[in-house]
Length: 279
Image 1: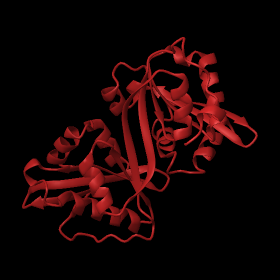
Image 2 (image 1 turned 120 degrees about the vertical axis):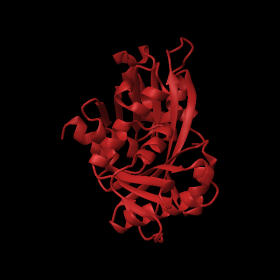
Image 3 (image 1 turned 60 degrees about the vertical axis):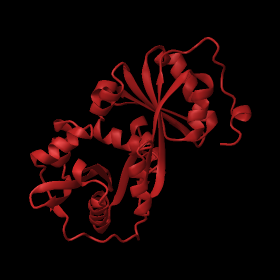
Image 4 (image 1 turned 45 degrees about the vertical axis):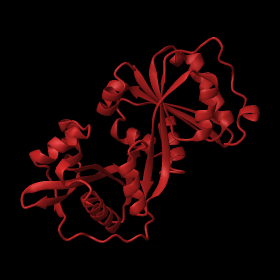
């Protein structure tokens, strides 16, 4: 296997934990650079891509040159990866670094001046969970202009939405006659994982449980097709977290973002033995 295949094999040992890595290799493989290191049965992987390649990153981090996604099987390998990044000159540029595990995050935070920006949590549902399909929720396969306006309000671009529906995205919508009250969509993330995303309720229709009804129906369809649902929430979005709790979803990934500008002279090498306690 080449390094790309080895990295994917490593990520698939825990696909929900490394969901973002697998997704970006799947969606943006033409722009992703993959570096892999192994020592015995331990592994470290770094994915990186230009921040402008992904609309969300370009909007959220306009001054960053690239995005780094480091992952390692243990703290020692995370330290190896960090040394390799220093040696290759990767730490001489402004960039965003995203972590999916606390151990790798701790290694980098101990050695680099990282500025926290946001954290997000992914949720999923056990395969044996059953959700009721709401008969009033319409299942649709192309967004109307009302859907598109709401998606843009949520931070999507028209191009992103069009690409999702070209790959088979499905809409779940509630209406008052023809007025759109609430909706969400599902689309293929990678393998059998399908994203439940773009949840939106019209301002005048909020606090009526409409979002729960469309998401519940979307989950029923995803699970009914034998797929794995994933619902991604920014941690400051209290309402969405409450929605996941009400639906009985389980957290499967905690993702943190940091801005890195430069390595300060005072930064010290990380020692797993002395810094790893309590993680």
